[in-house]
Image 1 (cartoon, one colour):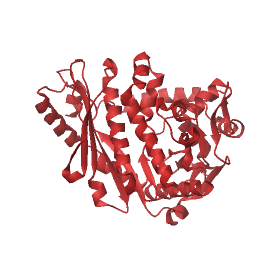
Image 2 (cartoon, one colour):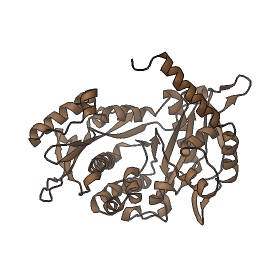
Image 3 (cartoon, rainbow, N blue to C red):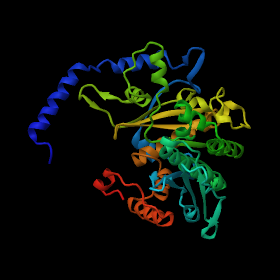
Image 4 (cartoon, helix red, strand yellow):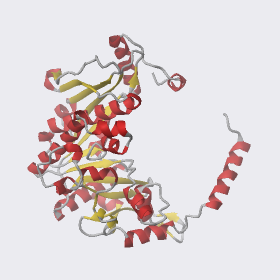
Amino acid sequence: MTLDRVHVDGIARLASAIANAVDDSDHGDLATQVWEGFLDPLRDGSRVVVEPVDEKRRRSVAIEDVALADPPFESVHGLDSGTINPTTFKNGLVLDVAQAAMAGVPSDLDLHRARTLVVTVHANDPTVDCETDWIVDDEGYSRRKVLHAPRVDRYAEGVVHALSLYLAEGEHALLQADAVDDLLVLDGPVYPMEVFTWQDGDATLRDLASEATPRKVVENYVRLVERFAERDIPLVGFVKNPASRGIVQTLRKKGVEAPWSDDTALFTRLLERWDDEAGERRTDCLTFTDWFVSRGGTDRTMAAGGDALGVDRELDPTAYEVAFFPIYDPRTDVCYRVESPAVFVRDDETRERLTQQLLHDVAVTRGPPPAVGKADELARVSQGEKAALRRKLEEYLDSDAVRRYDEERWGVM
């Protein structure tokens, strides 16, 4: 034990001094002012950053009622991709391995068996070319390939991670699209947002964002939207840890002293409800808003005025815009973000069915929808599996992984 009681008490007194300097008692009033005066629509100059799809309402539903109600969709499929995390080897290679899986509720064992695997490799040696075409094995249930990442030097680990993760997910979604009859829920955003952030990086990352490989990653998601729109089957993303800042950053540009770290903190403040007499948070209802269209932050890439990283869009550009609504679960004090391409939420009935389905799932699980949870279990690479894969990679590459002190300290490998 490194902290004894006197140290804990000392830290608590320091926190007390911080608390005296920070008064958030009026943050709720400010959040209400933002809600009432800025979001219908929210503009950045002449550009509309956020606007309601239809009405702008804060809503609530009794948790027990929505959990016991029949879900609007007969079946739901979930999709996720997991990686071993970027690994650097002594021969200069940096690589990550991702596997994507789709799960069904009700279960579909053949679907659960299917996998898409991508190994993305970064090499500083320009003569290295290790990319492969897609290879099919496991009686047709598995597809795998090696992807050669563009050279980016100090960003290599982040790049191989993002390319592996999103290429595996997008390819698997397209391959298994016909298995989805009613609704597909991605574990995370509906677009590869990490790739979109490269446009706001330094010159190296901005140049990378315009190359063919990232464009191919984005193209898979664009085609996925078109495929599902053609079949009239909705597609949503369930973001467990939303970190978008488009609203609060725009508010600050407009002179509003927004005290929230991100948009999620703002919506949490708007949606949490308190019992004033007991001084406690009410936990009987899920609270949420109606849907908004977002064109700020990384969402601007898929806005009608965005360039979609140069990918051709077959539908009207407004169809691809990011629509979202937050769900606040007071039982866990967590605010989630549900996203969908706007083409799926323009219809009133479909929009309400999606809303009720996601509320039902959160009420039942106290977390992500069951289909997402299943997909996460299928795609996740355990610590033991990561260690075994790295040892196997060391053997085949004839090079040891570069070990860091924290890995030794915490027994990561």
